[in-house]
Image 1 (cartoon, rainbow, N blue to C red):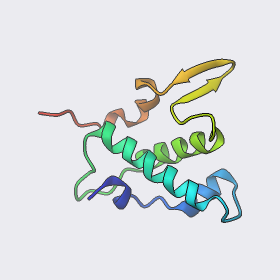
Image 2: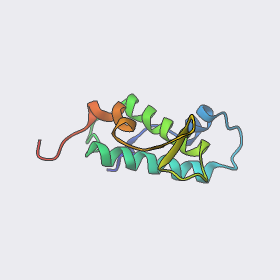
Image 3: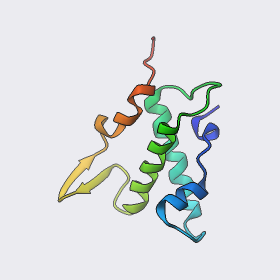
Length: 105
């Protein structure tokens, strides 16, 4: 089962986190939530099998959705921080590192 289908994180929680109190953005947020979960699963190389998805992973997913939502229209793979463009890189995934499985291990 895919990580996005196993996590307990809901669109309502994401909206609360983003201080959104309407439904106009639900379709966009749902797509971003699925995309962030897919990105986490690809990096992690697993979906936790029968184990629950750790809170830290769901928080990472929620934070990624928040960054994408706040910067929608600018592109999903670049962020601007203090005038510098930052590409999603290994540092972006540091909070997922403890849960990553390496192929062949």
